[in-house]
Length: 295
Length: 333
Image (tube, rainbow over all chains, first blue to last red; front, side, top):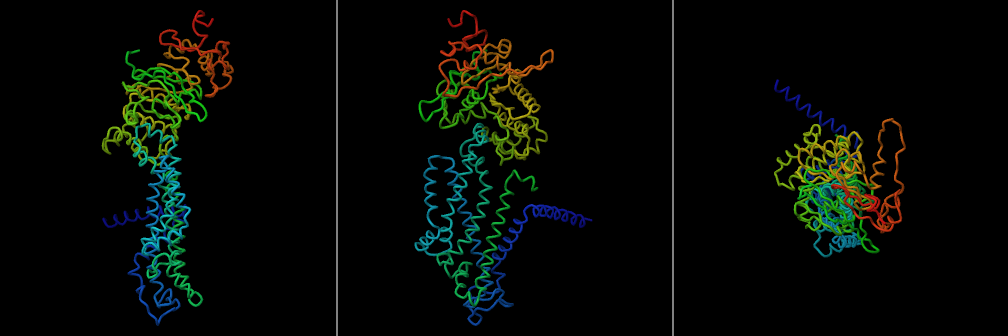
């Protein structure tokens, strides 16, 4: 009796989630696929130490440039290292960089953007700095930073974050400028709300939805930028198996062993694509005015 | 009239700085007073300075161009015109609060209405979360929102216009202000909802003893709500008095014209064409030295165009600014 009741309960819970998923599927099929692919890639990357069949750094000269097959899913590279294991480990670097760049640039951009949106005098100074930052080519900045500091993932994150900040600032500033003219902000002032509280409770929440969407695009482009910086040799140090590094090394053997480039490239493309697909749907889902239709 | 009115405005002038030339005055030499529990209606066409008057009472004039040029606004012994911004924050919401014209845009779309109302309590009384929420809930019940418990967690877009205006009223009254400023609170609503909202304001006023300043252009609303009426034209008060005096003997041609422009049913039930007032309110820079209404006035004479009529006391509290008002002896020579 109790057992059947429990079964019934868990069944109803399950069907409720299932119904919700079905509704989501009908409305945002692409985002759902994107989310699913992204989660799979994340799980693969995070569990890399357990899932990878080989040590990604172990060289095996006898097995160099093996074709993809049963022993080596994705084949091996010029040093006989297992490409599948290296690709899984490379996913960790990409995810780490994507997340930290998105997090850092939105956080810093949010602070600067809100300040610029609210204070006219701060606006004049801050936006000129941002314009200046936007005028610097990202790759040059990265190369300059790499030559100044010891190459490492931290430097790569900083180098990618800096050119992204002005975009976030512009977005946040634009939202703040339009929101502060709304009647409900005047109404909030008319109820005696203090300025910091006004910014935090009334204006900030309005920026969150576009900001989260922007963050997904930044994460996607950060993953991409990291790989091309590495490909050019100014990104992640070459000994780290990031996707860009694997592709850069494989480039030399593309004629005889194309899988060296194809496998990490497919993963890279999948990750960027899935993040962007997810971001598109998030835009709609995060708008409270559209919420009722999703529920 | 008691000796100590709740709010007294004396010679208020609201000016806007202009890029070429001296500041232009949008509201000039406005004086009125308001007693506790009274309803004052400010009437006039669009562009007469009604909303600016309301905003200057809240000290919310559009910055940096709008400013209070002269005059005093005394509320509980404090002059709002010169109060510090910190003092104003204490007054806003607690001593004097405001309902805006557009209920559709005066609530923050990303916050639940419960949190918006309870925030008011938090800001002014510093109560804890549960107490604030309880007050908000009580307030929603008071403004007769059906299913208040459920509505607390709704977002503004889930409510109708009338409901949102109720929420705005709840927000405005949750801290027991002495004065409620309502700037055309029913303009955006249809007539049945308008009647409900006005009835609600009237009812709450009786319950809480709040004084109400109601801005409107509808004499029907005035007749229903007002204890006292102030008619404005082109930034000046042209007639003022108790509602009784004003409806009994509207004296200024503008007031008369406004009342004539109101549809009414006569005994025969015959449809007569509504009277209209020809022309529009003169723009700020077009206001000459004479009576501003003269170009549109049927009774206007040369003298009206040449000099500004002063506000003169007619009887009781009834005062009018028109050369043609009052006894013939008082008229211009």
